[in-house]
Image (cartoon, rainbow, N blue to C red; front, side, top):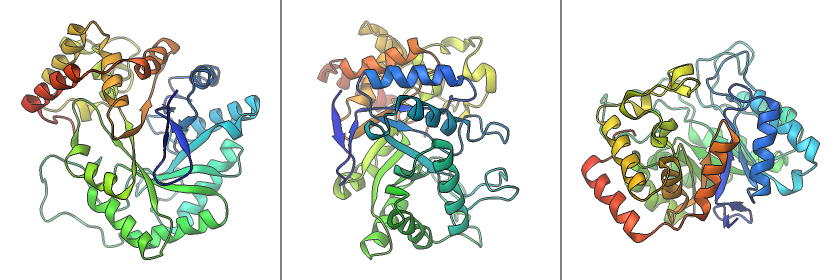
Length: 350
């Protein structure tokens, strides 16, 4: 599988990354290992997780995902061939991460998070450590298509980005992480981290993990220029819009065992106009003789500014489809057809 450079680093990551947020909830340890084996055999060397996982976040399951990947790394003895990325939570009122209190992006909380993640994974360092979401109050994903509350709400104890960045400098110097990445971040946030790093405060951001798919192309509005000029890699998550771009929910369908049926947490992709957009793209995929899931993944995998497409699956059959997107010949005609729909439909699910 093609490998692409991660930011300005010497790391070459596969153009498909295996996301693992179902491990420990919808997938057992054995099923997780089977997915990891299958992805590795197909040339995937990049694996993404978070201290938050599995999804949905719960006190009783938190940390299972990292533990499952840790047991796989130990059993396969392949740490030297795997690029491991995890995340620390941003500001959250959930108290189970820090043993009974809320969490912020301050020194004590970041140090607690990294040590717990390394222990669960059974390794001595992470190749990429990402901030899962900001400490400041921003809409989820940080890239809305219109302004909501104004002036924007701020908390009195907002952690300065320079303060957070200095902690990551400690982690790099201690050998616990190699590189810093962001997630669910805005153009201002990315540039602020870069500005502070360029002043010598801490490590320079190498990647940004944001949602990117057919119904959410907000990355292209401002972040694309930021990432291009500053050599920040886009790690695109949610290529299937939480399953809506597979076609399984078309026309109001609710398959048994689907994430919506189990958890009903897909509101990001249930906004006004979303159902019509999902159906339009799924129908377009069928016009090209492709499964909607293959088409949607191929769109993301083959975008020139996407360094790695973070795929997810709950079965090896779904994983096979996602991996196959690397081999799809994405044509100019397909892109023109997608762009024509996007011109009409916009970004209904930012």
